[in-house]
Structure formats: structure tokens, C-alpha cells
Image (cartoon, rainbow, N blue to C red; front, side, top):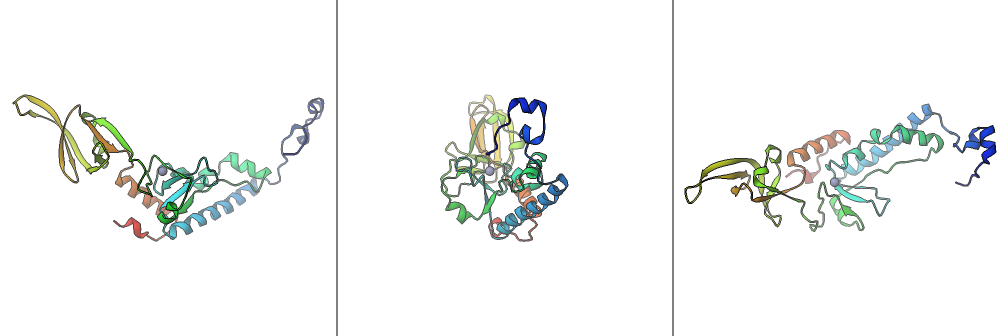
Length: 236
Ligand SMILES: [Zn+2]
């Protein structure tokens, strides 16, 4: 900005745009809607093209070394950035009226290989992209008695994060222990095995979206990015 500030006395007597410092619109709001539609079409085209080439990851705020973050494509934290119509709020549309070159940050979609080649990017804590296999496991600790239906589908783990299988069901059971004393215990059935914990024992789960959620989001992505391809990496 190189415009000079108006003198205060003038501001009171002659409140014109040039004196109040408000930028003169160069576009009408009606024109802005058409421009936003074209910008969004370009944004989606870039994302669709990368998606069609097998992108599985996305970097948000790629242009900002302090903010750039790597996500899995189905990450719930990434979702708002993919909804370009929601991103172009009234605030940003108004900014376009004074600066038609105003643009928003678009997630950079990329393959696993490209994501591995990135430097200076942090990994999202919600989706655990773990492209180098060295991100700390997103473990959450809770007491066995705290396991609930909403934990079904999450990975049960040992304290060091090794998988014990995906939780299928869990239930508190009452029965005699080795000495014939009635005790509560928690039976946890996973896809790999059945485990028993005392109610106050700590259990560990991978604090990630469940496979079911991930699949639902991937289906939404296919709709959103309008592609009829199924990247090979998704077929387990
Ligand atoms: Zn994420």
C-alpha cells in the first residue's frame, strides 16, 4: 500500500472514498460470482487431475513453511479445504471486488512418492500420514472399563503401539477369578484375537478415523473430484 493517509480535518468534512481509505471496487458483486465460479472450476480441475493421477495425500498451506501440513486425502481435517464453494466466503468474494487477483490456498494433491520427497512439512495429527514410517503412532490411553461402542472399528494396540487388531466388540464380564472371587473384567474381541483386561487396566487405541469412516470419505472424494478411477492403492 503506497497511498497517503488523508488529513483528519478533511475526513470529517468530505467523506469520499478516497479520503476514508476504502479501496474503490473494480468489479461489481455480480461480476464476482462469475469470476469465483471460474476460479473454483480451475481449482477443482487441478485437484481432479492430481486425483486421477493417483494422489493419496494433500498438503495444505504449501506456500507457508510454518503452516504446511501433510494429510491423507480422506482426512476429516482436510475436508473443509476441499469444499471450494464453502472456502470462497462472502468476505473473500468482497475482496475480489477490489482485487480481482485475490486467490485462496488450494490443497496440493500428490502421490505417496511425491509426499515422501517433501521436506519441511509436518504431519497431521488427525490422519497420521506416516509416509516415512517414522511418525509417532497416534496412541490414546484409556481405562479398559471406558471402552464403548464408538471405539469399535479402532485399532487396539499394546503400550508401544503394536497392533492387536481392530476392535469388534467389548463387554464388561463378571466371573470368578483364579481364587474363586467374583471379579469384573473387560473382554475385548478384535479381528486378531480376544483379550481380557481388568477394568482399571489401561488399554491403548490408535486415535485415528476408523476404516469405515475412511472408506466413506474416500467415496465422497470420488464424487467430489468427479473421477471414475479407483486408485490402485485403495484396493486392499
Ligand atoms: Zn490430516
